[in-house]
Amino acid sequence: MKGSVTVHMNAPADQVWNLIADVRNTPKYSPEVFESEWLDGATGPALGARFRGHVKRNEIGPIYWTTCRVTACEPGREFGFEVLAGDKPVNNWHYALAPAGDGTDVTESFWMTPGLLDTVFGIFGGQLRTRRNIRDMTTTLNRIKAEVEAA
Image 1 (cartoon, rainbow, N blue to C red):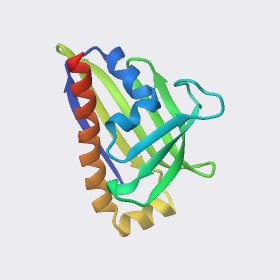
Image 2 (cartoon, rainbow, N blue to C red):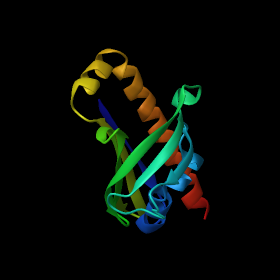
Image 3 (cartoon, rainbow, N blue to C red):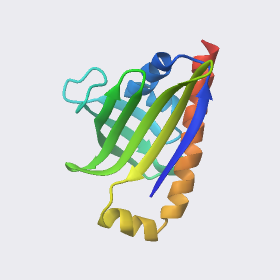
Image 4 (cartoon, rainbow, N blue to C red):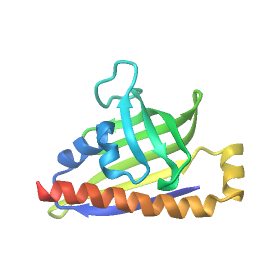
């Protein structure tokens, strides 16, 4: 399972990246994440930094915590993380920022880590989840766009 969405924002890449890469902002933009925090003494984005997010799946439940690890962290260019089950990555989220015209094209993408979980999930509802993720990524990026363009 995988998908992506791109939204153009009339703002510099660094401004957009600063909002995305501070995961404490995620609840302002994401339809499903309503709380997030850095872990293990981390105070901001860095490769390998861990954080957790409190998720309300499909905005109705179930409600659970996910632990994540930063996998890409280049200011103004990209930010990514993997969702962990124990110490194993099961899902990956990535933001790529590219200068475009008077602003920045921001692409949010996700992909399940290949393996048994991905296969089983793909058979039992993967298509619905992919559609939901694309809708939620569009909402997330449009909320970020509204904030950076209002500034």
